[in-house]
Length: 63
Image (cartoon, helix red, strand yellow):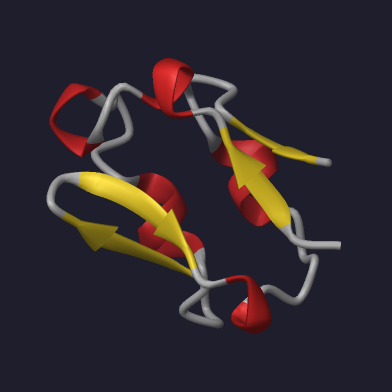
């Protein structure tokens, strides 16, 4: 089950205390940066949950 990103909590990469840590941690390329937003490519998500565990804004979760 792919993750979802709460865009209000995320606050864009410029406002992220982790400076886009979720993108850096995702080895599958499921999270990418597009126009300063974090965008999910769900077919690449392998449910490792690293992004959920490491999001400083708690903006990433499972549906």
